[in-house]
Length: 233
Image 1: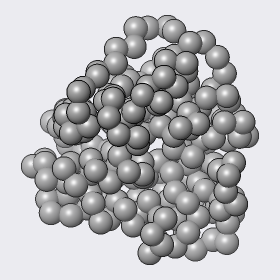
Image 2 (image 1 turned 90 degrees about the vertical axis):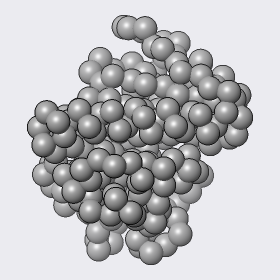
Image 3 (image 1 turned 90 degrees about the horizontal axis):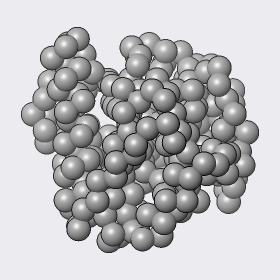
Image 4 (image 1 turned 30 degrees about the vertical axis):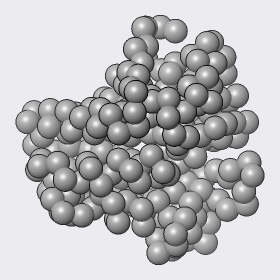
């Protein structure tokens, strides 16, 4: 590793989620104070479903915050598997309802066809992105970058199409290159299984094997890792 990697460990899931919210709000507040706008990338999943409603209550100038997804399943935004549906229901509520949201789904037949259009959407948001919130799967995937996938080698654009190893639905995801263009990454994981996998990933090895290494090994962003022993998300 090129630099020390402090891991913030908490006794409870609630305390860990509170720390994650604090980390995100710090970044947004700093960006708003310095430049008048801020950007926030969010994932889907159970951890996001628990954290985003708390984040939505924070009294910051949400009207000047760009919220975008780090990945999306190629389903309609009304589908229960849609990350956009999750974010609209949990984050874009209350004070945060006025944030400017950028989704990753379009009317194109496939994610691969849509990728140039989605790329243009994200290019419209100033970089580096201020803060990105990520979870990690039991296989070490982040966003929709999966072990062994060709998407792990994309270096020339912000988004790429991908497919989960166990699934047939296409997805669209931020690329490893996009995740380098972030000021702070907040990585949250729960449970002893994922904690052990994190320790394995911290050792030198290929991100193609464990994609979480894309953020563990990169030079640019500040990485804040937050864990708790309970739960499995």
